[in-house]
Amino acid sequence: MKEEEEEIVLYTNPISNVARSVKTLLNITSAGKFRTQNIDLFKGEQKQEAYTSINPMGQVPALMFGDKMMNESNSIMRFLASHYSQLHHLYPSDPKERHRVDTLMDLQGNMVRPQFLGAARKVVFP
Ligand SMILES: N[C@@H](CCC(=O)N[C@@H](CS)C(=O)NCC(=O)O)C(=O)O
Image (cartoon, rainbow, N blue to C red; front, side, top):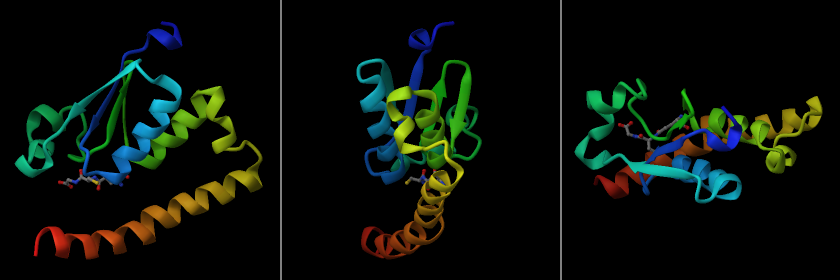
């Protein structure tokens, strides 16, 4: 199947910053060629079988790219940046440059986001 013919579905929720990051890259590369499916996190849809059969992690985002299901926002974004030539500059092939991007992504996922979420949860669910 040709790249342009792959069906692309982003499972998402507007409240999710990591899902919005993936959507931003899709908007650059595939505007109008992907669809989104909202998963209602407040109703717990992410833990229901209809969704965990798609993404066993029970979280958003998930990306169905043709017949391939992908989860973990940073992995999805690395895939998109590797797949689409117009995004190659975001994920350089030079190992040293790539290491810098990976470091920033790891810091975001492992340090910045957990601390932010801890504070945000106290505001959203006091
Ligand atoms: N490491 C994951 C984190 C995904 C994540 O935490 N998603 C949140 C929304 S921002 C979620 O689905 N939470 C619902 C839950 O865990 O039940 C990623 O980067 O994709």
